Amino acid sequence: MNPRAIVTVEPVIFLYLASTFLNSFALQRLILVKICEDQYDEDDVCTNLSLHPEESLVIQSKASYVLVLCTAVLTILSIPPSVLLGAWSDQAGRKLGMILPSIGASVGGVVFIVVVQVKGMSVYWCVLASALIGIFGNYVAIFLSVFSYIADITNDGNRTMRIGIVQSMVYIGGTVGYLLSGWLLQNYTFTHVFGVYCGCQVVSIVYVVLWLQESNGGTERMHITDERALAASDRILKKSIFLYGSRTWETFSKVRGGQDRLKLYLIFLSVFLIYVCSTGEQSILILYLTYPPQHFSIELFGIYNAIKMFLGGAALIGLFPFMLCCINQMTLAKAGVVLRLVSLVLLAFSTHTWMVFLSAVMNSLSGFTGAVLQSVASGIVERNEQGAMFSCMASIETICVIIGATVFGALYPQTLTSLPGFSFIVMAGFQVILLILIQWIGEITSSNNLLPDNENHNVSN
View: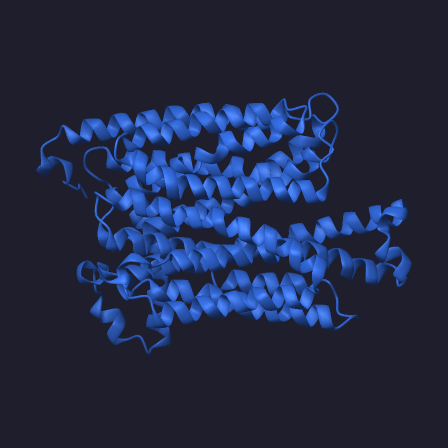
């Protein structure tokens, strides 16, 4: 068997996510250092912040503002190019969507290195670097391109398993990124960290160009000859950009037979709930675990995150393909939601370290839900709509970064003195809604399977 057909986009998403987690932690530390250098030009303050509580409060407050600004710029700017890229890749291929984010990340990484090397350089150059990464699509473009590629090269029989394996690279990449960031920052400098970040992007670009074959979806893609023929004209180019954006919307709103449009909307809503809870958890978890009674150290928090990521990836690679052979995929999706609910409740009421780590074990199968939903959504749309559909899904996930961090970031301090884990109870409540939605999706799928084939695939305009 051709090895280039076995190992495809997995290294792409692994390299990008590992470097992203690496960069995320290093960027937080860099912003703190730059603000301290700007506010207090005294080495003893910046090297011993724990001994200067008043100065530390000022630095933390400003750093929080800059980090929110970086996240907002990165998130908002990554949506428009990804919306256009999704529909465009349905016609022109998926590889460019995997290369552009790495180019943007490399440029952003170089800016970070310059900020490190130039002592008097403003911390707001980090915001500019985040903007450059976002303009090139960031992980939104990577996700839509990678999963569209998998949808192109798979069929209904093996698509769910392959998507699960690709999604496991997110967890494994996160594990490597968390562990590598701590080790590099402890033993080396920021320059080395951002150098590794840029190196991962270069390796990814080389891999896509030299190893990855273009997906076979091109034979069934729609081709618009008039736009291609007039691509040199600026006026037509602007029209084409609008056209690709409108195609993404058409894929979202298109009337489909057999209640498929309703099923697609339910999947999008389910993805929204999954990622709002996920980003909300990430935004408050370090605050919650370092607060009494857990009293986690930063080192223990890093170990917890690495273990949690590793277990999620191992479950998708080791258990998920095996369980698909003997259990219905919608049942696996519901099992992932139930265990996620249990892990959140356990986390909310944890009073000992072992309870927190047990919640990570219970959470390890939660990745099954996303893999199944992505596979089902891919089976609903046509091959020439895969990029546009995953573009919609990735855009929803990106919007959830802002919503989840804002909602739970505001809710957490309001209940801190009465019930610190209340935010996780709210997230558990969302899992109940998610379970109902997945049950509904399963019922629609079952009813569609009972329809005649010509009625199942009929699309009304």
